[in-house]
Image (cartoon, rainbow, N blue to C red):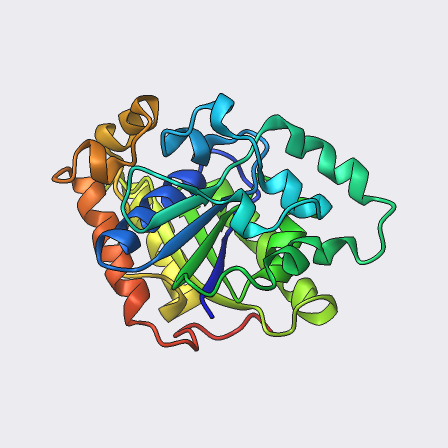
Length: 262
């Protein structure tokens, strides 16, 4: 069975979707069979992989409400070895629809049971919130990957997220573990970036990946062309950083280097 990794940060604009798309692409590029599940109603991961709205017929919404399973929802992308379950704005209604359901936090876990045997890695791109969609992802996942922007307010958000992960471990998914924290939008010219990095590494140690994702214009441009940065410009600093991150992720054993947030 594949490793299921939820890419989570409740703060918007931290490079979460960019990390999900490009890490999935990098893993596929080095020979892994990867499924990316777009669980954000904005559908940015789907757009970033070139899937236009009119091609998103069966989506993650259908998985959550139980009308379809992964084999019916998955679509091929332009990246060999990388498939996606897309998202549309319909997913925003799922939170309301799931309110009255029993065990509503387990809907995605149930939908993913079976149908993943052909994959090595499953990445879930979560919305920028800690609502029912993200709780479904954390309940279904084996691991959490946290993109963390190098700025002050991100640290406050990280503390809140770690508390939520502990709560999920106690109440919903005791096997959930932190795979790692990746520093994004890293600008070595900025002294604040260095201070944030020092604080995070002092606090979380080996849970923080050695690879950092730099601020990079090519990464920002790529989604508007419907391509991951690795396809748009493989030689740019951002693309090379995601390849290094993928290798670092793969060096981890099935038990993460980081300790669980117990």
